[in-house]
Image 1 (cartoon, rainbow, N blue to C red):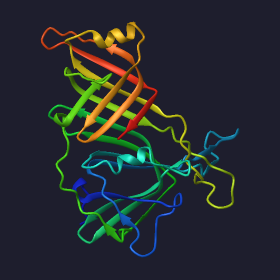
Image 2 (image 1 turned 180 degrees about the vertical axis):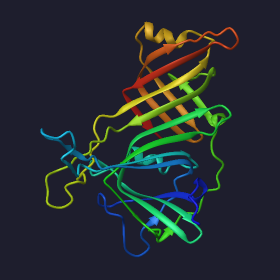
Image 3 (image 1 turned 90 degrees about the vertical axis):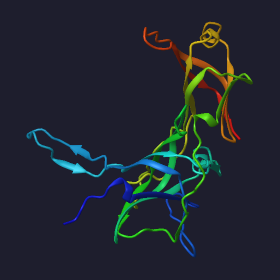
Length: 284
C-alpha cells in the first residue's frame, strides 16, 4: 500500500537561469542552491481554460486551452539573504529568473515538480519579538513540468547558521532608534506582467515576465508611549525608516503613514498599529 507524502519529505532548491525559462545544463549543471528553512511551499497551476457556450444548449460546448498560469509560494526562515536578493536582482533591464525544483522523496520514490522561468512578484519580511525573522514570497513562472527523478547535478548542504530573531533587529525613524515597537513587517511588490504573444510554438505559455511599478509598504506595532508617529499624519510629514536585521540594512525613504489604529482594551496594554508606504528603498 502506498502512503501519501508528508511535509518532512519535501525540499525546494533553485538555480539561476541565463536565458529566461531555460534550466542551466552542461557539466556540473544544474547546481541547485539552498533557500532557507522552508516552513511551507505551495506549487500551483491554473490552465485558464477557455469556456465556450452557445445558444441552443445549457451545456458548455468546448473547453479550450488558455494561458497557463504557474505560481509558487514559499514561507521560509532565512539564514542568509541570497535568495531574497532576487527580489531586486536586475540584469539587462529585467529581473533575474530562476528554475525552482520542489521534490518529494519517500525512500526510492521521487516526484519532482519543476517551475521554470520564475521571478519574485512579492516578498514580505516579518519580524517580532521571540520569533524568528520570516520571509513570505510569491513567484510567477513560465512553465511547470514534473518527473520521477531529481534534476540537480548537485545540491547545496543546509546552512547551519542560527536564524535571526526579533532580538537581532533595530528600528530607526529619521536616523533615531525607536524603542517602543514590538514587531514590524515590510514588503516589496514587483507587479510582474504575464506577457503572452501569438506564436506557433507554445502559445499557451507566456513569452516574457516584465516587472512594472514597484510598491513599497509595511506595518509596525508599538506600545503606546507617544503620539509622535500618528502626529506625522496630522502634519503630513515624510520620514525615513530603517530596519536593521542582523548585518542587513533595509532603508525606506519618502515614507508616510497610510493608516493608524489604537485599540484600547481594558485588560491589555494600549497598542498602536501603523501602516506605511514609501517612495524609495535601498538594501545594504
